[in-house]
Length: 241
Image 1 (cartoon, rainbow, N blue to C red):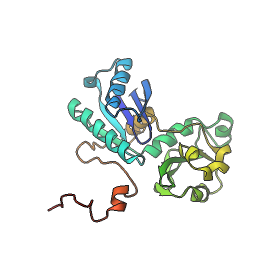
Image 2 (cartoon, rainbow, N blue to C red):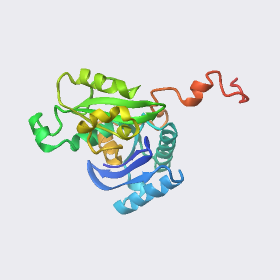
Image 3 (cartoon, rainbow, N blue to C red):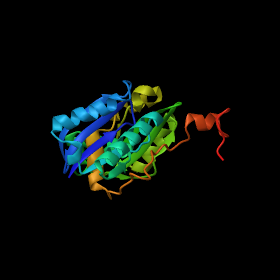
Image 4 (spheres, rainbow, N blue to C red):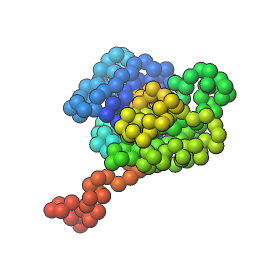
C-alpha cells in the first residue's frame, strides 16, 4: 500500500510517501513559512516519489499532541487530500511517531545489550508544549506504558523512571532545547527532535487502519489558550443557540 504520512505537530512538519513500509520519498517543511506552502511541500514529495494523489491508498496524519495551530492545519490538509482522492484517513499519535523514530536511533551496542533493536529500551518522547510545559509519552517496544500527558519539565524524569522500572531510558524530542530544566538529561537524549512523516505512515500501516475522515480530530490533551482565558466564550462573540 502507498501511504502519504504527514505530521504537523511541531514547527518542522514531516512528510513522506511510504510503500508497504519502504520510504520512497520524504522531507521536512518549516511551518513558520506560509501555511499554504505545506501543500506545495506535499506536492514536491509526491513528485519526487513519482506518485500522483490518485495512486495513494491512504493518508496518515499525526494527530498530536503538539502545536494547536499546526495540528488543525495538518488535520484539515490531510482530510482535504483524503476527501479529494476518495481515500481513507488514518490517525496516529505524534508522540508515538517520535518514539518510533527514536527507537531506530538507539545506539547498536545499547540496543543489543537491552535485547534487540530498541526492544527493552524505554523511549520518552517529549515535545515542547509552551506555557512552561512539555507533552510527554513513554513507550517500550512501540507500546505506550501510560497515557500521554502534559506536565512541568521538572516532573518528567521522575514520571519516566517510575514507568521504566529500572529499564534503560532514552529521551527524544524538541523539548530539551526549550526547557533548561531538562539539561540534566542531555546525556540520555537522542538526536531526534520531531516526528517524521515516514514514522506516521509506518505506524498507521501497522495499526487498526480505522478511517477517521469524518470524525477525526486532533489530540490536544489540554485546553487551548482561548479556552483557558475565556471559559465562557470570547467577549463579543456570537453566542451559540
